[in-house]
Image (cartoon, rainbow, N blue to C red):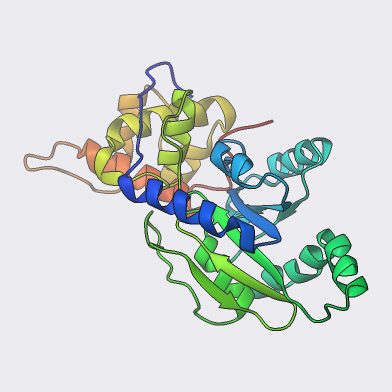
Length: 283
């Protein structure tokens, strides 16, 4: 990201409790379905999940693929394939997209199903735990998958507070889990990326500093995307924020550009996809 990196850390107490609950329930499930944000596939992988999932079947879903750079997503799919990690790209708001997960889960768990059949245990549904960081789209995925509002959704972290089972019929049952991070981000870029996609509480972040980091990244990797969106020239970082403020008529008393509001607009446009399809890390 940028030279003037900010150090963002966020690990509220309820996440410790959530991890303990997941550890308690992991023995009940056959497979972990881990949702990753397609814009930051590595930074959105919680290392605690690897420890938790030891010995379980795994499926990684590159969610919000509709917001990510499609060329970068292709590279990430190849990257995970080389690591022998089964992945699927998805827009979890699309019901048809989500419905194809059942066949993939049954294929991954084929050995387990055949073992059950040999034991005479027919029609036992696969039990899947859906995991991921905050605001990665787990509840939206579950609701699209189930075809009904089974899980609470929201565009901010911390909507799902506890574990809940969701029955999807004879083939698969899901357990939804709260979004959890890990206690310390060793690389400052990880905290910045997580904050940019909305996985960290906005109240603890300086959106101005975050926007400066985003501007520097975009100027290097997506040159022209800012000028196209706001019809401005891409100059110095501070000047870009002033130009966005002028373009969007964000003015303080006296006519001064509202830099903080401009920073918030830039970040919101990234999160919503209005800025364009942007991936914040490349394999």
